[in-house]
Length: 224
Image 1 (cartoon, rainbow, N blue to C red):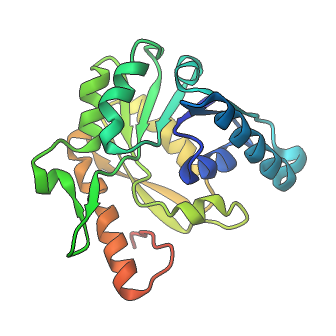
Image 2 (image 1 turned 45 degrees about the vertical axis):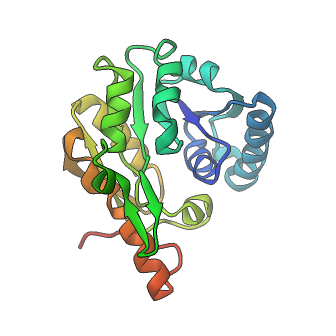
């Protein structure tokens, strides 16, 4: 399977590339082609050194639109403010059966701490914004909101965490759940349809606030 990462040169993109490359071809996307290729080469060396002959996938870099055209699954590692422009740019290039994952969390830092901006500013959740700008024909799944970037990149360690998953299409959910299960120590928990994805998104600022005030490093969530 070809898994595309829009905004794949950031820390989360690196983590997903390293975790999924043993079984899948990872397509690292950026607006800057050379930046994408350099990042992909670095990720590939790290993954190959760690997995050795167990790695059957590849990691390549290209510009975002090319990545969108080739992907079976496309993860949007972008800021909330870029959803409209990014989705409008890629929507004409995505295959109809492409599954789009939104781990996006709209938040800002205030004097009180991190806050979830849709609640503060009466805006859509990130997942609903992605769905609105891509259109109904695409299968949108929301997940990975509470995953630590540092822990995701540490491929020698399991995450020992849960991630909530929201979506409306059973086949898309099954595909994403399989990808989640391939990440060591990460468990998926179905939360509900895409309309309540805000309940998962809002946990990120909560985690950041609790981590800052209680000196907790790289926090995550585990349901027991």
